[in-house]
Length: 481
Image (cartoon, rainbow, N blue to C red):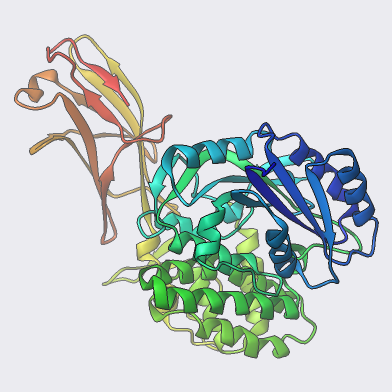
């Protein structure tokens, strides 16, 4: 009988972890699956564990090959797979019980080519947020596409997904050799798909290994050979995007600069001969578009500037400074007649290094924080209390203006400051005639030549704060989110 889903699992020297992985696959609420275990020339007891498991559960099969890496192992597993759908798992990870049932149910409903879901890191038996996948799966979205939902650029892994087999074969998807084989394939699948489903559920537990001996690929990511492999994968993705989806290239470059460059900097920090890495580092930088380099946050621009000049000792100091700022780096105003806003980092206007001021310029990184914390009816008016500050700026805002807005109606409110960042204002229902029933609270702040505007957020719900007037009566107003 042909199974509905085939799960391909490459296996290489994962004896301490493979049993937990296989148990999680056997426990799937979707019973109509086969699991193709591809032993990639393991030297430990991994293959024996896999064969023992297959002997007890006929849904599991084991094939073997000489060691070629995870990409060729996955390709070999796909050739043996019989299912109408494909999924992938790594033998040291864990798949939650309802993951495949949830992903397949979505595909059956929508007809999309692939479905993907949220990921958690498995660290010492506890689940944590996957920083690689942060901001991606905050809410379910069906029948979308990476060109419409560009946050999917951050979804660069193959194992938190289920693919239609005919989609995979029609587009000739195949894993390359190398240790970052999944990144190009994940991006290709997202671009080539007609539509994609994003489920809000966690569908994969990605283990962080802390082996003392043999370590996983992700644990060796600051090694020179590993960095060369990562650059190869980055180049493959950029070449594909250049041809098929150039509108995604800037977003991909920004992600590379945010995430992948961390491992390059780590290598430069720990290498006893960092000069040997500088040529590789410059090759990495050369892959990025000019817009990405110009739009980078100021602290990253400083790191890149020091790297370009081969100032490894200074770069190490900046990396240490970054780690020491557990609550974030500060942005400060500097200048008398004309005020600029700069990152408060080492080496600013250092006479020896002569780093241009624009490297430190951080005005565009300042974000307005505006929250309503309380709203109460006094019997005659509504009293609103809240908080206004500038993220990363450690000072009280200067001028503060508030308006209540509905359509084209814009009512200015009087403001009374409370402490460093607090304020209080009142809303007289008599002012609201001709507007509503829903109003939003707008804020404008001005400090040392910096002007920021925005809408207030609800202090608890993390959504725009709205003042609603159901049935419009001057005493019948209430607050909704």
